[in-house]
Length: 179
Image: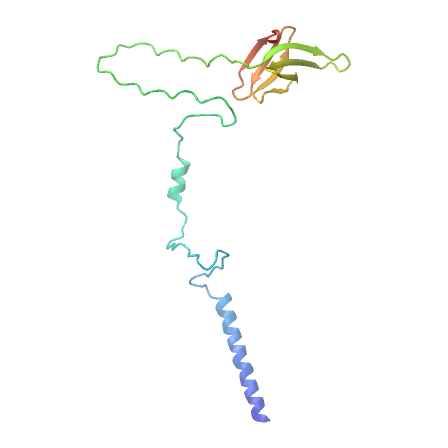
């Protein structure tokens, strides 16, 4: 009986030493390599990254990047402007000429016809009527026509619209709709 107690005590001490060793190794020592369990499956092989330091040189290059392509509002359905052809250099001496005046933007064209307006006497709200083909649009001040133009002002025979993409304004005269 005494011998059995000695064996049980020895086994208990050995188990406690093994338990303490495992705890010490897992929590108090820095591991050399970390094993990460993933849900990628058995065929997953991680990339061998030898130096996982932050690449600040790449970040600086991205910070200093300047976009050189065409500028375009991605929310506008207007077509892209035609690409400009590069100018061929001439060998003749050029006299000093004043720089050409930049051409202004093309005039703003509203693809709808303004054919009338009305004012509600009880609320005082004005409405303008526009048509495009068989479609009729009834707009109040601040409403948007065809997702492109905002109605800014309604006059007796005119309506002022603002293009959402550029902020340019145009005045449309009242016309009879095409029958």
